[in-house]
Image (cartoon, rainbow, N blue to C red; front, top):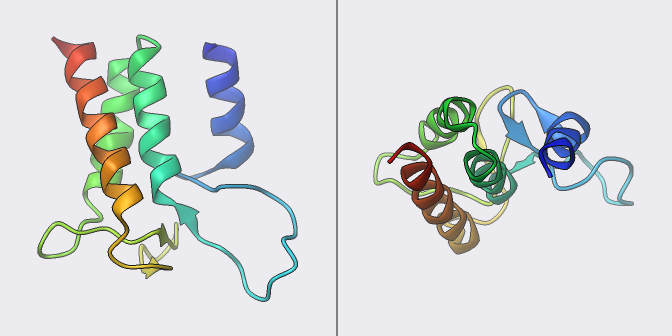
Length: 107
């Protein structure tokens, strides 16, 4: 499982963030990193016994919250500009899952 997690991070990672897919999707413009995927990666890494790595990724993702703690669907990995739907409930649910997994991994 650890190798699968690392393969996903390598293939879809963009800095501290994760894209939903690579390749052409037929739509104009470029999609940003999908924040739910970024939080899901944190959860997977934490549950695989690597809380230090998960914590570093979590810190980067959590730092993106706006002034009232909300997240969008996507983020530009370079500028950190919110993209897509805002606010995005799926992102917030993934954040909760990542926080629980990270807490469990460090307890």
